[in-house]
Length: 112
Image (cartoon, rainbow, N blue to C red; front, side, top):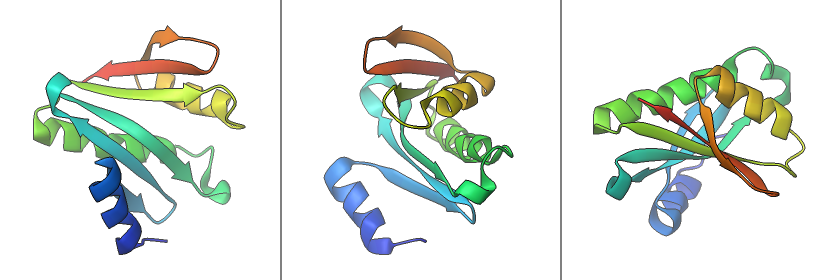
């Protein structure tokens, strides 16, 4: 699944980092101005879902955030995403709290 070219693209054009495990990946961006990490994307292959694997990816990013001295982890769930309910549950069960919402997305954060 890993693509060095895609990782290079994410870093150069979007300022994102990429972490991968056998079952999926997560992309995130360090926002130095707010001393935070923003989760961009989480993908877990269908056969690996509903078994805590998304949490493992989030845990990996939290560890990176602590290494960087970040104080908060931020993420958004887009309500039109077909898996929005599961994504929201995952972030809430991982300690996230809703900080704002509108008709298109729900924004969450977790203090590190």
